[in-house]
Length: 94
Image (tube, rainbow, N blue to C red):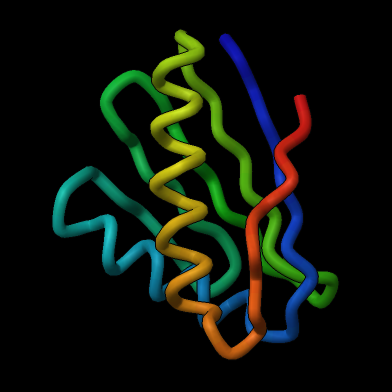
């Protein structure tokens, strides 16, 4: 299993977590609270954790293609939802 992580420092972590989970729930299986979310995509799982530091994103998947797809989907939506913060992209680490 391949695992990548990104951290977005923001005071709106809970807002973005809930917004993203509600959005993805229209297409994939999602469970969430105000501080933790899990989205089960084809080929992988994305988890979101909100705390005072920001929003921690973790993607776990079996293939490089599934990881790349999930990262791109999460990043494009988060950048759009957080437009007031001028996020330009996420730094994913293994």
